Length: 318
Length: 273
Image 1 (cartoon, chains in turn cyan, purple):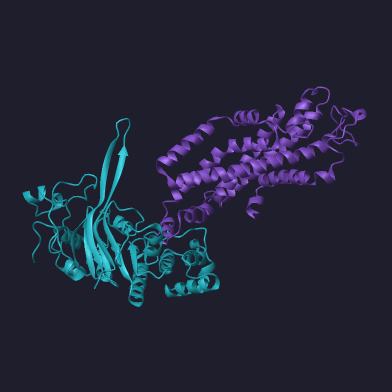
Image 2 (image 1 turned 90 degrees about the horizontal axis):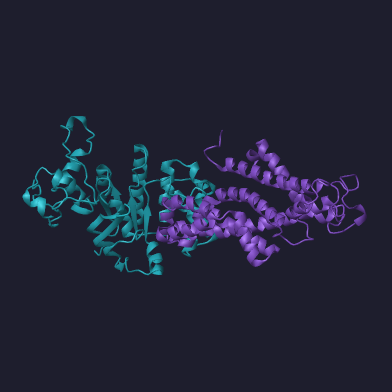
């Protein structure tokens, strides 16, 4: 099956210039060569610690920030090469759901206006017809039609996130990039929103790029997952395989660090060595070697090539 | 609105403003005399039942001239501030939205404008273009553009980082739509508060320019011009400059009081206290 999203060699470097009179420019390689594909209707997870570049990937895919290099193919169309009018057409088919439900809605607009506006801009529907579509979307995400005339501050975080999801659905997209969609919510509300997203995925055949730092959320929602470390993917594969038998030492560390619900199965606390280094000055060789128990001389000098779903010189084999 | 008027200072300010606005609008009907009509026999009359606020050196009725002068003051300040809000606001918003070096450059230009005291800048413009109503409006507008650019820029800098702006872009909205339809309503209250405060400054600048003879030409009645005429006879006929002075004071004070009230009412940090 042809993938709906095909990302290869994606790069985004930010440069920061500081100091006067002799300024120093540091280049932060937020995303440094990322490849992955997403099949239609598939939920693809992107997981990693804070600052590993996963949100940057999400935005670069949609060209909300301009990537520096690489190709992004959406359904065969080159997103990076798209003209501004072609990009507008593309945006009807790929949408984003944000992490912070408080800043993602315009405080001065009613929910109705927020949902009706994209329909008008894209010439899909106007007036009563558009309002009917908006009411339908609200129902689909589990909110009463009376929400139309209300303002964002009248809703809770979970309700706002539902509104954000409804807004993403206005243009009937085929792909939704969800950037930590439940991280800002209470655990009980997280479950409801995740169920809603899963339900929408099934009903509408939506493909997802699901960005999260929460392994359990990814494990439940996604079929395939990529683990990112310092701007690069270090391991990729089906969720069951990656999390039950992680091959990269970093993935193993992440898995062992995530809490286990059953207390009797809880072992000793895993050892987590060090912190994520700055992307402005990544260590030479394999970026993970300063925190890795299996590191050898080779790891300190040569970055491992990505082979068989993992980028490691000494992957776990069990 | 009710909350705004509950503050006594604000209501007094609003009362002053309304009084002068109504007086200016109704001037042709409520003025007891023609403001330009000279009556040499009754010149330099002190306030009396016949001439409530006295007459000037040509025997013109001071009350009528104040009422008609209010029209000039209000037309000039409202027009100038409207121009400044639209142009300055647009400059500030676009500059903040584009950001980077462009923003830096635009704001440096605004700083240069801001470094002139408004009276001096107004003086230069009127001296160059000649004193008439339109030039006066242009001059005063020019002095207020930079402050409005600044006040509009600051909130846009933070708003443009909010996710709803990114969401708008992701939905395929143009930059113009995002900036003027989505961001602008969020800064409107701050800009309007500033506008009411700057109205007062515009009234003062207009009066100052008229006082030094660079306002609307005589014999048209202006408050600044009246004060100047009266200034020459201040010991013999103090009412000539005192009453226009009180009119200016009432309007400036009233606008400031209303502006402060609006600011308090729109500031979320002060609401509820």
